[in-house]
Length: 158
View 1 (cartoon, rainbow, N blue to C red):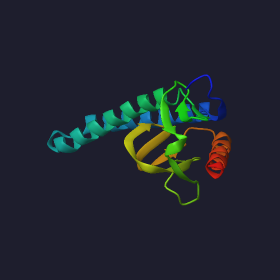
View 2 (cartoon, one colour):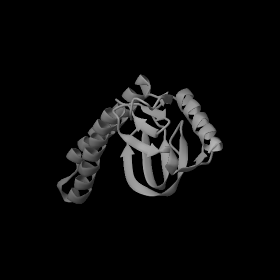
View 3 (cartoon, rainbow, N blue to C red):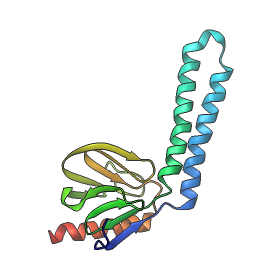
View 4 (cartoon, one colour):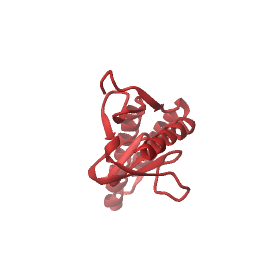
């Protein structure tokens, strides 16, 4: 993001959602590891599976905590996070979808892209897969509504 880009809208994770999401993944991971530890020796494959999923949940908890330290900014150039990482340029957006039955994150919206993009994910903030980008999760619903409205305005002005 350059100094010439002005912030049109922004969305930041709410503290309760950030703490609750991290705690839920952490508790799930701890419970699965404890359950794997309690397994009988003859059920080693299931204990191994529970252990791996438990470790995965703990890693996800840490990634969620790291990702939600940042927020999202909508500028005239596109959507980026507050660390400066560009998520998507405005030229790549084909349409905005925020309907009830849309495949989108909680409290958020989905963007349909002009062409497929490389998969990426910031847990609690956004995900990108194929021709879709989902924004939301731990972000404030009111701030995301404003961001979606501004994106809609920018798309109509094109």
